Length: 98
Image (tube, rainbow, N blue to C red):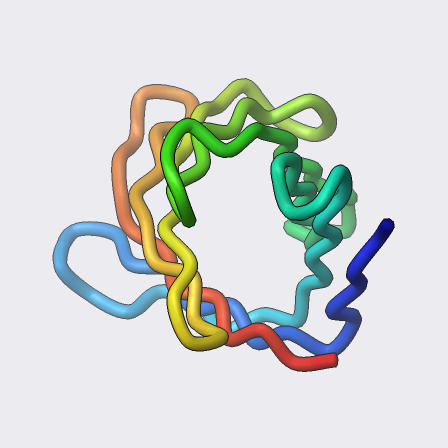
């Protein structure tokens, strides 16, 4: 079964400052064992894909648009985690909105 959240709000943090508020969409598959996060950055689509490593905890790799890895923890409709991309590190928060 697939769960799609197409109207999500994503906030990213870099150097301890809020740097971006973007639209994104999140897809859960395989009874929430797999997750896909899609968003636009500089006109390009970026896609992170990952799997659940513990209940509600996901490890992701960027498979389209950049070279990165990330983690997310989902609880009560909010996903929070960290990312590392092209030598930069930061955090992100995704508000899951259908």
